[in-house]
Image (cartoon, rainbow, N blue to C red; front, side, top):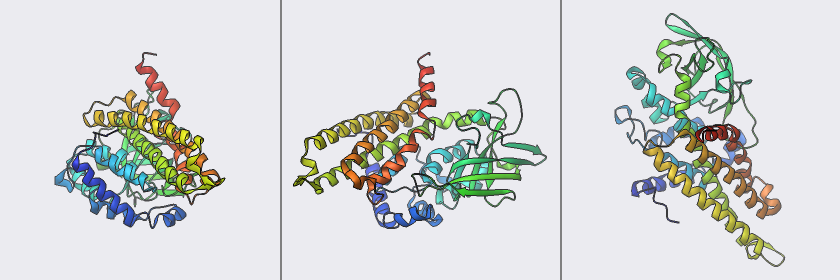
Length: 381
């Protein structure tokens, strides 16, 4: 079916993204996977391309375009090239909105130009070793002492944590009976004393996405690095979750489409029992089912993208689209891998990497189970 969500300007951006990924990412990607990290200078090159500054206001070095659609195009092209660019999606879709929404004027002048150019890469530190999805239970604390906070605690599963120059740390700045109150956003700079990075965690998939343990031992964070108002972080976090979940859905849908594309190519080239794998009725039926699933996911996602750009995407609807697209991703990629036979289990083939990368999408950004509770509440249950 014809897509109507994108215009000519998005098509032009898509060509730019595709050319960059083909020339500057795809040839080096196996080396980055082996290293478990995208080289830091790659983000500067992406910044020069204009990708990182699309939503940053012009006075701070960006394009000032208030639309999520360019990020969606970039995610689609990245998946279509069978590559992953580490913490880039978190920087663009999760962290940047906090800076845009809650920086004061001085902070905007200090940070936004670097965020747009790629000179400053970011991550956000929410999850702790003992809390998982229960953000209100976090124990990382920051005590205010004059003109600074003293930050102590530990975070884990922090995407982009190795490459990040700035880390938004969610910390408890005031105790109280209300678990959701008393949380604040503190911007920790990479060279602050007492801030250390632990392991780059060894994951099943997303091998180029640095995922770190972070430790804070009496880190002195200036009051000028408080993002937004003190004790308002929980409201800020929940307010940005629809875009975070929509971004994950975009990646999941694009990965499913990439799996279908590479599998169609494979079954027409691969022979078995004297004929191509594509000639078997089972192959035709399986891929027809996958194509139908992909079409349904794309329609739902495009509607969500349009609603988000119009400021109308609700938390419940964002949860629905994330569940649908990530479950679809797992289902389609699994069926496509089966059609590859034994070769599907080899990382040399794109389908193997897609399979390993897919599983976490039903966990991060809110597990499927947590999202179902959000949807059920919207139904009055």
